[in-house]
Amino acid sequence: MSDPRISWDQYFIAQSAILSTRSTCNRLHVGAILVRDNRIIASGYNGAVSGTPHCTEVGDLMVDGHCVRAVHAEQNALMQAAKMGIPVDNTELYVTDVPCLECTKLLLQAGIIKINYMRNYRNDPFAAELLEQKKVPLVHVPFAAQTAKQVNLDQFIDPSQRSE
Ligand SMILES: [Zn+2]
Ligand SMILES: [Zn+2]
Image (cartoon, rainbow, N blue to C red; front, side, top):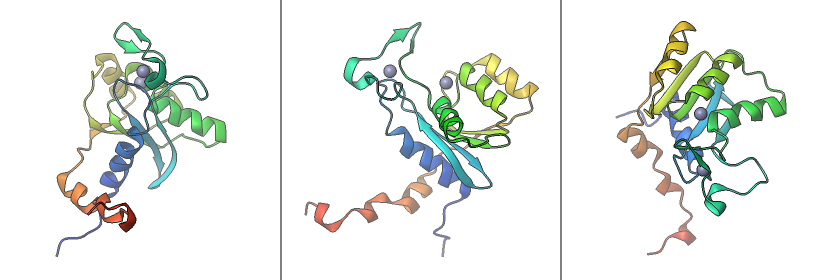
């Protein structure tokens, strides 16, 4: 019999994927989780500054091909930790998409020791150089079809919500 438990990597990457579905930017939907000792200590998704209009309501604010309205998921995870006074030194990041240069700089400066990502996205060469200089591994964790089967969110649907 196959083990019905998913691996830690798949567990965290799946949660970053679920977080990304809360994104309020019309561009890429990103989710990020900070993890220490296999525990989630902070999380974020990309969207407008709290309490200000969302991209989904007023449109993206595009500058040089990037939406500048949205705070990036990685930045939101770091800021959530800052707001709540949670140290992020020596933690790992799980994120749906390879962090941009600005996020990479902030993550390195905050003491993140490993970046696990699901998808490649506009990978920045200088960000890659910085990660190498700081010896922080950028590890691809593809979301597996087997995990989707094991997670099987359909099984949790309340019977009253089923149409048949
Ligand atoms: Zn946007
Ligand atoms: Zn970013």
